[in-house]
Image (tube, rainbow, N blue to C red; front, side, top):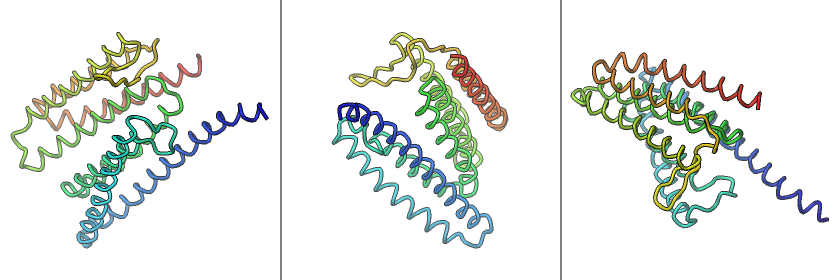
Length: 260
């Protein structure tokens, strides 16, 4: 009886991890299927009404989910890590859906194309971090965020209303890179922990190699500088460079797991 009691908590924890992974993979698959229908609706040019109505319904749903998620985060006070959908994860998913709906209303098929890539990428990054918990998770999450910002800023310039925002967008990208480098430097001094007031966020292990993090920040900073002169080249070559760095990081961290 005692042995069963000692095993059950571990078994429940293992089941919870598996259930979370299955849930997030299912949500990602469902969202990609929904994007497929939205893309077909807007690409043919015959079903704009369906596209707009579907995005509006998704937006209202996302707004309600965001309100509920904020309430959970505030009421639980950072607890709830043993639940199937943690408060932090629920807030992230709802905010991502809300931002996606706003982007869909602005850029239609271009937004669908970006979300086709971004949504599975976020899911994969989360699963890798959830399973392995090494430096690949924060570094790749930063690179995915930077890639999304780079793409969005370029599309906003092409949209026309933000034609004079080239330098402000470049400054925002550079600020993102500087903020990341500052966070990594702080984590290196604090044993992998980022302290924000009274809250602590564990990003890296104590003995983490920060070279990949510096490289990631340098690539985004270089893309920001190029963006100030040529947004089109910054978006084209910057996205390819970020994608290449993510692939190299995956190989690097995978080899590290194999030999350690």
